[in-house]
Length: 179
Image 1 (spheres, rainbow, N blue to C red):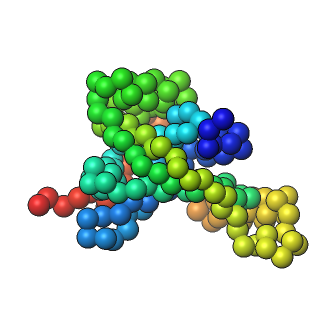
Image 2: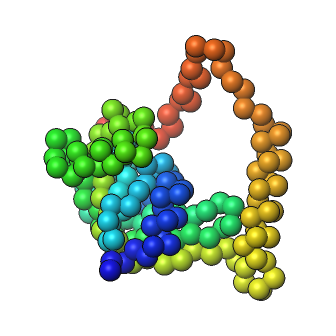
């Protein structure tokens, strides 16, 4: 059995959103959400480089990686630390990652620039301090955040684009400026 427990794998597969931290050459942190985070096997996670220039630059320069995956309703999750390897198009691992994403229903596979596989050396739970005094249960936390998110969605209703039109993407803020 590998480092990733069944519960860790369940959470990653359910959430699919991991927050990936790396370190830039100047020592500053880089934190980037990865909506393609998935389990590779019992010891590895992966995500697709769709628009991750700083993250992949940091990995190429040798930065370690930490990925945090948290269920936002129960406020519990895991942190995964390790080294990452970037797999370029036409490599066997790239093709396997693309096929795994397609099997999960991803519509973004045509935009993937690389598959990043993380060998997890350390995994640990992340648990909200709200549980520390023993008064808060998972059911209480779930109900609290379901109500909170429902209230947020009532205040900011999603506006559907007219039939046949797609909503334009927001401008990108995370591009590396040209040197």
